[in-house]
Length: 145
Image (cartoon, rainbow, N blue to C red; front, top):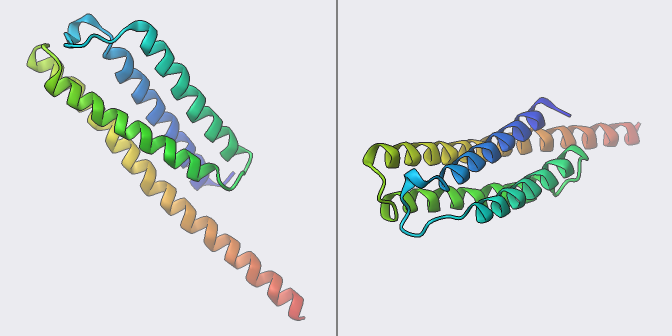
């Protein structure tokens, strides 16, 4: 696995961990959500997030070409989840301002991590495509000899 691919996978794991942290913090009574989040819902969301991320990361480790596109879809979905958490904390919480700001900052960090993931995934794609083009050019040179 190339260094770029490792970076993409590690940042995807960081994205997952941040999402899970924020997800479980939202369940705490101190958040004083107008529509309280249930622990059973948090468990379901945790399982689904782990399955989505794990499946796409495993496909990436197995070098399935479409895997990074699927992982991009997963990261995009959970970026929307972070936005939803921010909106919930701003509009649907009676918690004190410090807790709300802290949660917005953590969810904002999650959005930043996901945006950074897209940047490094794009860079990885450029590097991998360049490598493929070089291999194709080498095969063509060998064929002409």
